[in-house]
Length: 259
Image (tube, rainbow, N blue to C red; front, side, top):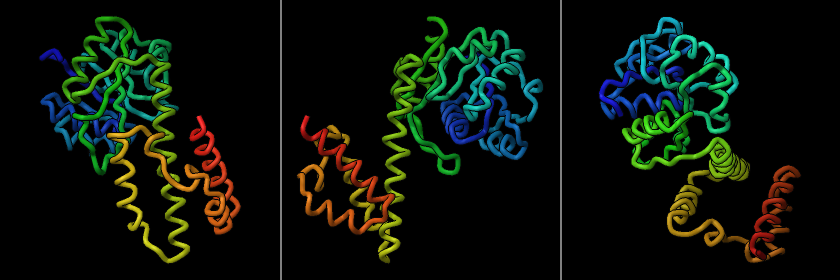
């Protein structure tokens, strides 16, 4: 990163917080934080020693503006940011929105800074070992975004908007859907007076195996073995909704096991 880069952060949610903390840890905290609500803006700004405001036009001058807000508001807010910062590099952090959305909203120099991680502002995860996927509107912007990304992560990879959308879909399966399955397990255990904590060593070991085995190699269980007696007994214990999910996932495992 250039020594005189001035960064402004538009947003104060989960990803915005993770980025602000990471940038501050790298010695380049945002100069200011914007949010629609003063409470959110001030909370994050105080955390990293920045100014805060709820008016984009009141933000200070900047070389880089990082927009990290809900996808549905991105284009509208980008249009305001682009009018305020016609010469700055404007970045978004969304997985499923193409980089072109920034240009369509009026940005002249623009790109993407997308850390592949689930984040929560109450428990910020360090980004230094998280892969950050980047994209830029031209070679100069791409190089600048790469320098920025390397201040917060050891792993920086270029990805097109199409590739990043695939990453986002994969992340939904790997993280959001797996969490939903954990919730199903918790409901089954709760109905039978058992603690979900008993699953934690199993979950931890399953995740650990992903570091040394492919998901297909690591697959175990009755569907992998083709044990229909066990599967039928399991489904008989479940309500209609969970039984249908169990059948569909088991069929998926059986089909992939035959490939």
